[in-house]
Length: 269
Image (cartoon, rainbow, N blue to C red; front, side, top):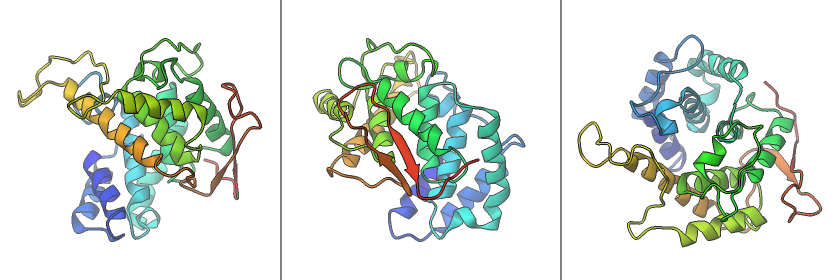
């Protein structure tokens, strides 16, 4: 899954031609899909979403097929798998803001995953999980979506990077107050090693190869999203990744402002 996504992502950004290894990875991805639309988890860890969350693997599959060049998402070999994938999301609604953010990201590239109203609600929820110290935290994002917001969670690299990147992808301006504060947090919290820290209960646990510790997986993922977030904010304005357009509220500095998304043509599951 992760290999197919990485290869498709790279092909899309380096010439727009699908390499044979990418096509083979996508075929292998579909061959391992379960009847319910999911896949086995990617790793043996207990704390990293990319390893232990079934939804994460389905999101990666959606993104892999959608960003693959040469119109792969419309090819016959992808259709059955995409149908099962969409049914999986319909049968397994997101329960946390983290999962909603991942689905929002995928929905910007693949039709039929979210309606405009669901996108608007997710943007508002994501902005609302902003921590008091300026960024976002994985702990805050993984609380139940309808639970009271705890702004006391210390921000971390993964939560802040993911939130800013997804918000920028959907079209929220780089000078929005929460994003500005998040960028300030990122710029002030990069460690001497070059990484951004994300707390992990796996700190000190050896990897399968006994090279380093398992918490480095979390640090690397958080650092990757932090870099994507910084890159996404290099320009003052950014067009949404799809045809969806943001309607900005009159008072953009209000933390409870309602964000709305409108589309030139409605998409629905």
